Image (cartoon, rainbow, N blue to C red):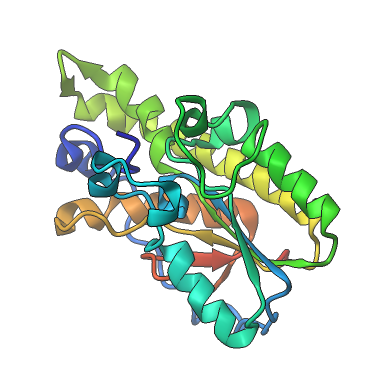
Length: 249
């Protein structure tokens, strides 16, 4: 099932990514965010987290309209307090990775499942078309991508259903660098298409209850992503961490 962050032996895998200490909180290191009021459209991009995927709804074969309790829906309700007429367009695709976002069809739609808002081609192509068709009308944009890239790290390090921590440890820096680079490339294309939009990159969702899983690996990935995009801290989304990517000057 395309549930982000789900893999075999999560504790062993993510504990093996203890490469750097936790990142220092950024609130004290950056100026306070500048208020950028929402515009006519809120555009949600990414994977199953953006979609609002829940396995029990999938098992019950519920329609896409039933997946309405994710962070996008919560954030939309908050945005409506500021702009009651805002329209949400949710292109979230369960199973999406940073690579398929740019180069591949949405596997969720390709296998016959409904999207929250249908699109053709890649999610990036659909996004850029939408932004060009609605110039100056889209803000904020949220982007949630990371979990489905993890197989690129875990797969080569798995033998007989056992994950090799040493392999993961050795491969992690290159994997994280590549992930951050792909996210950075996506962000630059979004900036070019919507220079006035507030673009928010959500951090890793806090789906693990085990503190040893939650602590060391997540900050390393987030620190790399922040470094690649020059993000400023944001505070609106109910995920573990989130970064406003208003382009720095």
